[in-house]
Amino acid sequence: IGLDISSGVKLFLRNVAITHSVPLELRTANGFTLAEEQELLRDVDDARLHGRRFSGGKDLLASIA
Image (cartoon, rainbow, N blue to C red; front, side, top):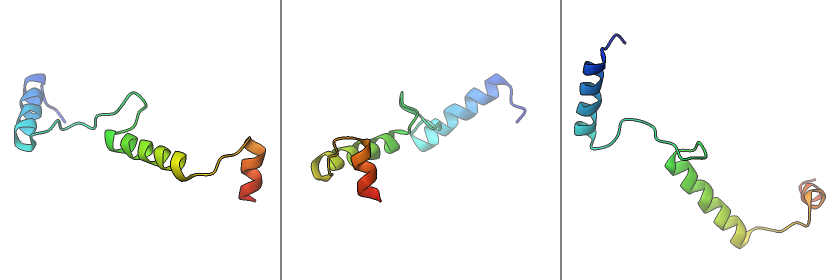
């Protein structure tokens, strides 16, 4: 967008001051946003508590068909 480094840093810091947050989409080591990863972990916990168990892939596929 044609900004020099100094102007870019000032713009970044101004956005931090205005929004009180980092104006970047931070990602976890797995490549998900924090909200996505928390939702995934909740889904995994729910599946462990309430889900069905299968002895292998064939049993899983048979239950879908």
